Length: 272
Picture 1 (cartoon, rainbow, N blue to C red):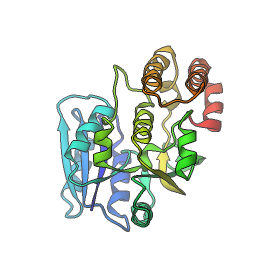
Picture 2: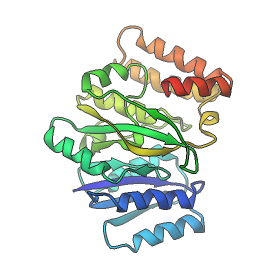
Picture 3: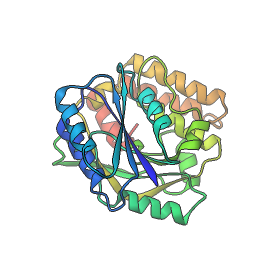
Picture 4: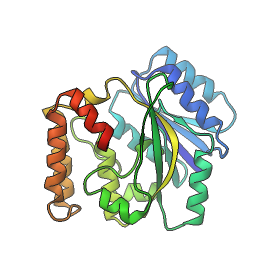
């Protein structure tokens, strides 16, 4: 038995949310529940999609409404608290699971009970999900994941299945005064510090929708200043070894101040 955790806010596209939920409801291994966090008030189109799936019989959707938009990290934290089961599968509201994603991941987890965090590779598409843009591969084995995490996120967030209790013990998703793309990375690092065992299945189990504004959201001094504060927290906790903190900082600093065209080239190479 497991929960699927999704957060949605008012700027999401209703058709994309519909595609996401369809891919969850058509899985070869169905979740026991879907916890859908409404991160603030939504428009009528999104509400109609949610109602359509709430009316379905299985799996049940547990809707968690938040009175105002608080950002993904805080919304996911509320969702985790409302998940009924120890295993939680993450899913972004505009992406699509391949039909046997959960079956493959839980087959692996059942055969390898020491693993408590399991992700996969992803294939990135344009907003219409018609053109394949890239594949983001991540390390497979725990030892390689641990080394990789010294510099970059070792997991594709929308593919991850993790144990609720371990995430609670790690302090849930962190949040400062502005959302960046690093909150999940900090959580992975904390889980690694706590001794959680990771694994990435070397298949593209999620088709990820890449938004037009992705790079603009990941650039600028204010974005880097929040990244610095998160990285400093990890450094102070002893996660980074040697000069890896400064190397990580150096890479991210130049990535955030570069023109978007050049940043796009770097992103295709290393996926910050």
